Image (tube, rainbow, N blue to C red; front, side, top):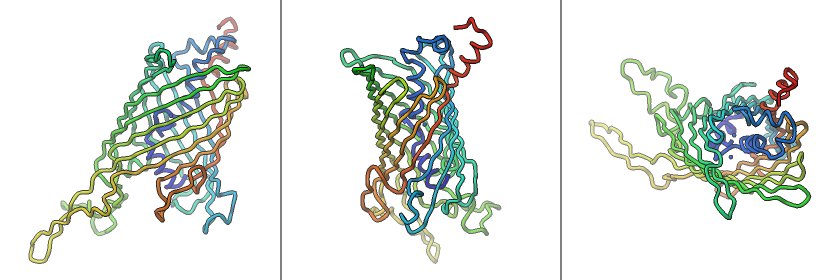
Length: 366
């Protein structure tokens, strides 16, 4: 996985995840919730067992990603294919019928040798998300919209968050869902998720691993801080909105799409000072021409999922990260650009796996 992807994950700190950061709740989180609460879960003995488990909805994901430009060697001046894996464990535990705790732990590895990273096949942790969720707190009358509030803690286990000297991210949010029954057994589900995240950081800028001036070691009270920061400002807070649609064509085939709108508010620029010859101090105000206080981006996801087995779902999709502006100041194309990635995801419903083993060990259980 490249630094570009690492920074993107940190921008979403989710989250997704509806995985980064709702994220907000990640896409897989929504799928797990629906699997755990699906009406047809009562149709078989294993489904009845699953609904009794306090860990229902727990999943394990294996994702494979390939940047779309890898398919066209001449798309850019430098050919830079990126093929990566992502393993993501998302356990959950229901304390009551509605109150539940969720954890997201992810580990990624790039199998190609992209030219924008100095490491080769380096496993990289995602930030760990810990969610407290109250599912279906209220159902809005007439509209039939279910509202689920949540509170998320982001633990800075990724290299990107550590470079931001992050202590913690705290994010209250909520999701809203409306389900529609369609002819021929089809369903249409609409989702909206909102999350506000406040980041607690030691410094307001990205930090290097070591001072850029090697003679500054920090010993004897030396202040090496001015040689550690990169100048890139950290986000102080983030607001995310996610709009999702899922069309259940049959019980096994589903099509889904999501639009993420992400706004990050940066730490403000602060004036500096420098010492002139003779010992006088000159105050240097922040340059208003560089005082950009917000970063805006959008993310587009499309997928088609097939339930190969009650315990296994396979999905094929696309993921496009769309920063507000290109390097030359122009707007990027919305649905396809140099950040577009093709994904193949295998999701294992751990509650179904346990239920299958349970029934074989104890056939009378249901």
